[in-house]
Length: 395
Image (cartoon, rainbow, N blue to C red):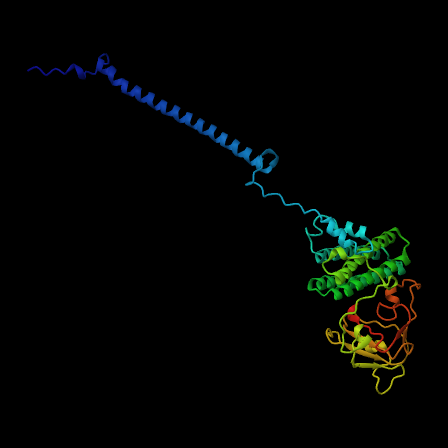
């Protein structure tokens, strides 16, 4: 029996059409794989280009952020510019400065932008004048310190500079007290404090003139002349404000008794009547301590300075009365800065006398140091019963 013949379709002969067809699927598979590789490579290149583009954009934006000149500013990028100070109210400043001895200097010192508020009240102009004086005082203290630092070996100049620094610290304290008093409406207290501040500055200025042997000192003397004028201007405004209030048009330059000016009598400090009460002298004072030249059973002290030293440091509202009996007291009396409301009462004109021997002509001596009593008198002082009162708190 013949074996079956194998079908030709499954012949292994390579020449058959079926052998050729069996190779084609493999070739297509190779072509598909190459296409995928090409697409992947193209995608990578595209991603690389996109990344480079993004990097360049971010880098440019960063450079523009750090260099504002390369970008247009917007309200979101920058805060609005600060509003410049308002121009000074020159007309109102000039009216207030008419009350001073140096009106042009006064106007110049207050005309810097922001120094005086727009449409100011008179009291605000006074505050500004006090502020100008205070700032210049601080500069003056620095100048004096420089003189002291450069004056090693020069006893007179060192002494003057040391005294100046001491009394200018008092001037600073009194200027600060002035501003507080003006704020609280105590204008007469403010005048007293500013008068003291001015006196301290003047004493330093006069002392410097005795050692004007260097350009540094001469320049400082010139500076203090301006400071004294500034402080005097502020004080003059207070005087007009005390007399005329907010009616700044009526403010006038200060006058003295030589010009026929006399201070208006204020309320009495005591319960007395007549001239003494109208002049503000307190009555009914009782001495806390008594000073007698030759001692005695009713006198606790023989010198005025001993009595002053016994005054309390915290006596701020109650007067400490020192009765000084008849006699000539040859001493220099110093009332320490911290002692308040010290009152001297003498036995009469020509009866109670305090006299000192210091004078400005002595080397390294200032008016402050030469004062017979405190820093306020440089000559012999006659103390008259109820006709002379000395309140240390006023200075």
